[in-house]
Amino acid sequence: MQSRFPVRKLFLLVSLLAFQVRAQDGFELGGQAGSAFRMGFGARGMATANALSAVSNGDALSYYNPALTPFQTRPTAFVSTGFLPFDRTLNYVSYVQRLKPSGGFSVALINAGVSNIQGRDSDGQPTESYATSENQFLFSFGTKLAEDFAVGVSAKILYFSLFQDVKSTTVGFDVGLLYRPSERLTLALVLADINSKYKWDTSQLYGRDGTTTIDRFPLRRKIAASYAPTFLDGQLSAEIEWVGSTLLARFGTEISLHKNFGLSAGIDQLDFERRVSPKPTLGFSLKTSWNSWNPVLHYGYVVEPYSGDGIHVVSLTLGFE
Image 1 (cartoon, rainbow, N blue to C red):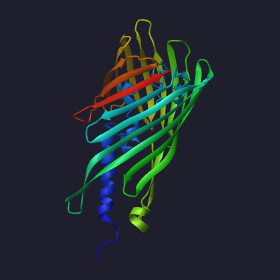
Image 2: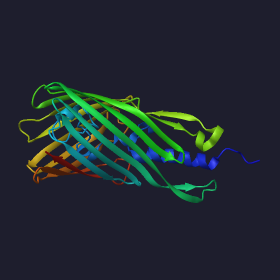
Image 3: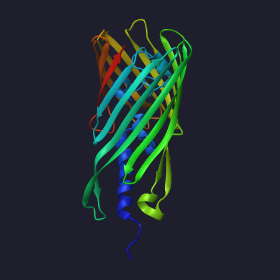
Image 4: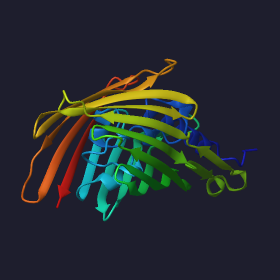
């Protein structure tokens, strides 16, 4: 007698989960949930090895630290896309604005996914192609409690469309602190992915055989610093991060070679126990101005140690008065 349990659908679902975990990030951390959202945000951030949690000048990206938003000097819109191997997609949109007298807010969207996943039947024959869509909506607010000290919080709506009738919508939070003891030195603390998780309910797909499963994101704790030395027209930044129980470090730099041109470089994912390989990064930025508009084009490249090709990211930032 044929089993009532949908073996073909189960096989497809497990395949989608496995492919999503492997393809989204060379840094698998055991395949923990949310790996796509740990890859970084846009070309500037990824070109500096994602070491921007304590960088308060330039484009304030609340993805790295919501306490950065009060330091934004003008309203800024941001759009970015990535070119990744293995049929992956990675896109970003954000808007940040200062709120007088001492606050700032930001809204942002991260979209990631994998396409062209080949489905197969129980005999191994190709059926149809599938795709996943992983999304994070960020709502961030920060305020200065003093001229040199700010706090911030982000609320994140996490939506993942994995398969037919298998979707997850949950909420997570980030909190951050930023302190500037001098004009050249900035320090930061960030606690990210508080309560972040995916919650899967397969009862609509499997009926009475369905179950509810929770995949929790690893809690992220960051200690960060940035410094603008007198001998360099630019800045140096460094971070130590615990992703769950895994300790990582990253270092980045931005150097201005001309008022309209700069270079970025860094090294991300330095594992003190050498369980994963580091990710060298580099990039550049081109600036111009037109009336009250200040567009900036950023390009970033990330070496993926587990892929034959790297990640290319292009971003356009538009600041206006």
